[in-house]
Amino acid sequence: MTSQRSKPDISNLLFKPMLAGIYEFDSDESFVFRVTGHHFLLIHRGRLDGMNGSTPVTAKGQELAYFHPSCKNSYTSPKGTVLQQVIFEIIGTPVRPKPLLLGEVGTVPPVIALGDHFDEMRAMFDIICLELGISGVAHRLESLAAIYRILALLSRLMTPEALYGTHLDSLEWARTRMYEALSVKTHVYKLAREVGMQKDSFIRAFKRRYGLTPRAYNKALLLREAIRLLHESTLSIKQIAMGMGWRDAKSLTDNLRKHCGANAEQIRAGAKYNLDPIHIEGSPRLNIHIVPPGVRRNYIDQWILPGHMDHYSAATADMIATKGITRKK
Image (cartoon, rainbow, N blue to C red):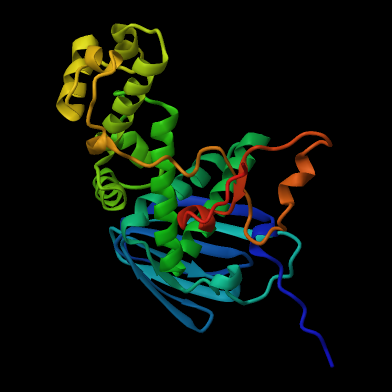
């Protein structure tokens, strides 16, 4: 009885970028070629009709075409087509005429529709095009990092439920960023860019998840923090307002009166106020060690010295998303 050799985990493989570029065809073009690596072509506009060995490959604008290693590949594109290409090899593994296997997700198909994620994919191709031709360790690492991110995005696109889960995590990350930098100067477009989403899509998704737009949620955080400082600090109302980015003490007082039914002086003096309109739950990503799935229960103990205790909880991303976290007492 023969045992089947286990396939290497894609995340443990080392890649070698070989070629990259961006092209605009000023006439109909036809290419016949042999590639020993994995060949990706990002179609900006126009189309590509080709053969990957005996497998047909047809892709149009906003799609990604993939050719696995083969003795003979070919494609044609009409005049006006604009595309980028990246070719990379896997170091230390024999070249086989087979598609790239992305772990449990499966093999990369010949064509992948990118939809709203075209710009995200293009950014990775741009990095490789910019960095590949420059010597130096930093430039080599930038190219390698971009390849891993291309493969990560492909994995998400091939499993829609994983893509959805990533967006949930991205929203949670954006919410955590608001906690980290309490300021009225928080820019929604910057938060959206940080989590790889378009501004309008980010606003809609955030409101669906938390019931408030990012701007309204940020204001709620500011007012809650202002109330805490009014109760627990000796800072003047002006100092609190200016420290959090308000124009002046009046701006803070007006917002407190509007949303809580009491101004800053009244709240500091102990007057009752209505906190319900700005009731928001704490961010579950704060003060938690995020660990890989499937690790042993005492995983974080490897970093704790005898006689010391870690007061923070450990959780996987799935546990955070479902709030299944047991905090240490």
